[in-house]
Image (cartoon, rainbow, N blue to C red; front, side, top):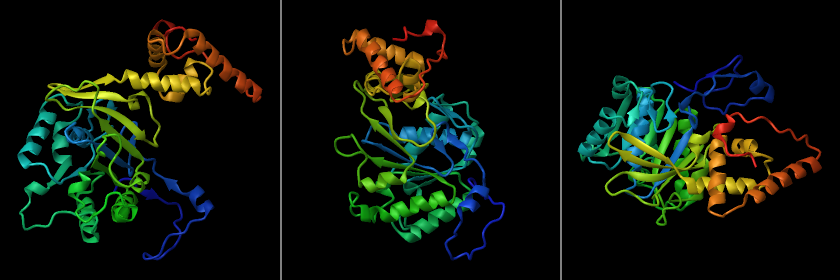
Length: 359
């Protein structure tokens, strides 16, 4: 099973007792590094909450990620380093629609660079619409269903469990806004982590489309949270959304910046969300934590050319002046010097011709 632990001298304990380790035990413990499932933001044993309003394309994105992980491919700007075993639990989609979407994603260029044969064999699907009506489907609020699903994961030796979506596999969840009612689901997700299995839980947005539906207690369970919102000018008849990360614990990069995704005939078209980038850059400037563009870019997880373009747009839109930018960097430098910190201006990593002047 992935995410396994290699121990030098495991402390003795009974199977039905909680394991206790000293700090020294932990220091001596040899752990296998967690590998990326979707680089750079999802690793082995972590959990993701993917939320969206209906009709934007969350199932298209979920299937794209499932196929990319199963085949060791690429979806959008993210690479899946090697093929993984993925189990998808689909609670509502008609089997024909599920079949057609998977065919579209695997036969076209939507999921790139992967091994199609590996994807076909590594992705297993349990769909409610594929079952006999007399067979009870999963309800992850029930201990019996949790046990059954954990056993399925063990039998298939899966690396990733995807549940699409919470409302269709949690019939016993009477009140999504109740932290107490959500506890059984939280317990199940934590048990997946204990097994070293990553979990992707797909969920609906609130009525305003701005946050995931349900109790705030749900959010503490996840290492990663991704929200899909309606773009400013949505195309007609296409899956399209503005994707943004609300939370992630792995080391990020510029690919985690808010982007607009649109599913075209030959793949996902991903465009920079310039308004959000502008706001982040301006906020970063005003924080007085950065003394130059290089630091600002690093702190925001962007490349310098992106920061330079954002500064240029802010000036053109008269949201800030060149002199104000200089003064903000100057104030940040003065604060650092007053604190007795060494101020060093580093050489930019990128060619000067790719950058606007470093204000």
